[in-house]
Length: 113
Image (tube, rainbow, N blue to C red; front, side, top):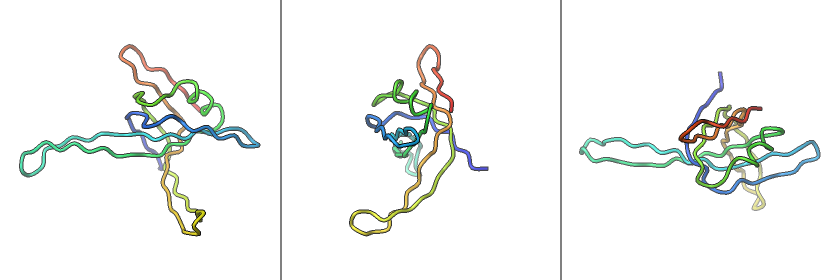
């Protein structure tokens, strides 16, 4: 099963892409990890993830998301490769979202595919 769920903060303003068959939005998601290393020091690290949402979910994300907002993202990992403008092979990993939920103090706001 290819399934991932992450909770983090939207890292930048979302990017909207229009296609003949609809629209997609992409955004970065920052997740934090804190742990104590072998020297008993607290270590904080941030990982960045690329997220893409399609169709109606993209529309709802466009209305709901902004930089810094905390969200829960559920989806699947997608591995793809392409040749960039410098003719170099590029490999990417992104999360294809099927559910994005805003995390607020009161109550989550949900966007499902």
